[in-house]
Image (cartoon, rainbow, N blue to C red; front, side, top):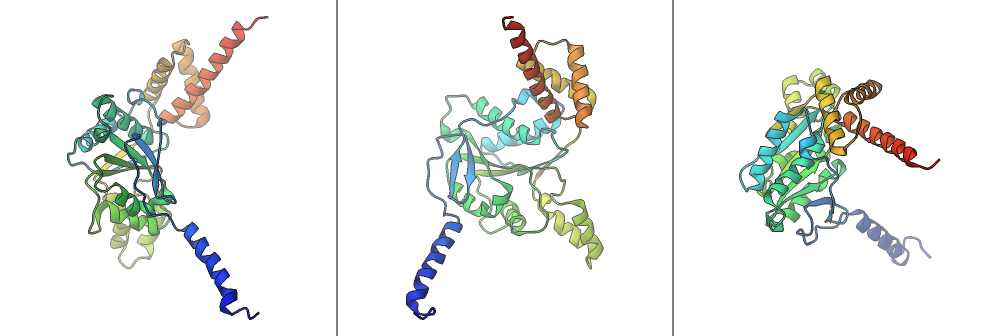
Length: 300
């Protein structure tokens, strides 16, 4: 049979069509968004997957970021109340509580409303992965006009180049004729102040005909966040205050001097002092103390 005949080509084309359908993200589907206060965006299925319990740290346990906590809390409270609020970029050193603060503030705002508050009045946290930013327009179409208010959250946002995701996010934040829905706010965290490596910005300055314009283009995305909050490494007293707070929350029975000495040794071993390092130390210490307690109680 002639390989170019319609009878031969049709099955091949049919298989190609089915393969393309599987690769193409499904269009957003109508779903009940009152079943949870947190969701994860699944662009391939065009739906939001509910999260029954968010992994988070209580707001009162986040030390050393009082100013940052106040700014994020105030902005989020205004948004939840239906008042104007800004998209927010939380940038800075690793492990300083950026993503923990977003999740803790979301929980605190809903807790202030009370458990009896109707679902439509509670704030929804929606996590979107950095690799899924190109699907943001589809997500906004799904949320547009809904009675609930949605806080979109992208953790560890950065770009290695000006790719399609970069342009999609720019358009959503401050551009496009449809604009961002009034019931949607965007929060992102990043270790980079301008979301791109410094060498990329400097390379643009060195090679561009107009270095100033090239640099402005590279940092224009971060400028689209109305609230821009920096996080920095903590000093030793703040680090030890974090350790004390976590230990008290866990109910650990340990001499304060020993606690601080072991916490400092842990931070030296990690080469950093931060909320994340303090939390990891307490996790390890809790296991050590509980293991010792079990050994002491075991017969023989």
